[in-house]
Length: 232
Image 1 (tube, one colour):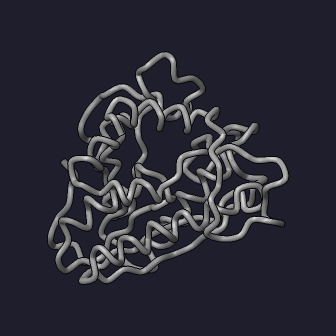
Image 2 (cartoon, rainbow, N blue to C red):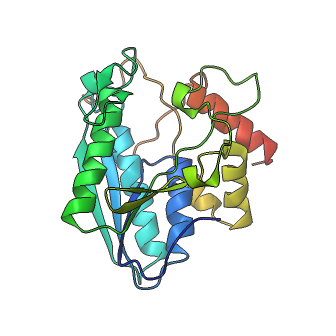
Image 3 (cartoon, rainbow, N blue to C red):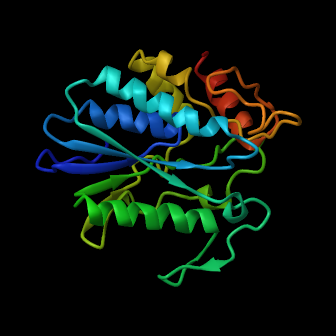
């Protein structure tokens, strides 16, 4: 169950354009009546994967069409490719003394700024757990979590309720929810692949054009595994 309090007037949701965050946004918006929704997205890897920006915009537009009575506001931020996790990993100490990658620090700091500027009551992120299937390799280290306590899913941070409802959830459950709620059209506009393509970058990409999948990266493996498990 996703924690939500009807008394909240402003909430933030991080929406990347991937299946996890898109589902989270849908489930939350299905609960909302009189709450403003701030959608936080980031321009990432703009030179090598310029389409990622438009994936998040497509999801945002779908949400606005599906929930016309909700007051949405989209906030777009930029992450320099040099500061992405990439080959550098987590190697920077943030202001709270934690070792993080540059992109992790920017995502958190941007969410804090939006929360302060717009008086958010809560902020949500759709981070999921790595698959337990050993055939899926090279998952993100910070997604190798084991269930500890439900309090990890909902925490107070500087007066804002921070929610990670999918923290102990694997991708196969995420895909099952798209079938259960009959929103495969939303799933079809999301993207998981993090592969780069030779001779296909910011110089020649045209917004809206079909982008191939590498079928090799962890994100492709995870999505294909989850879709096969659900016969999608």
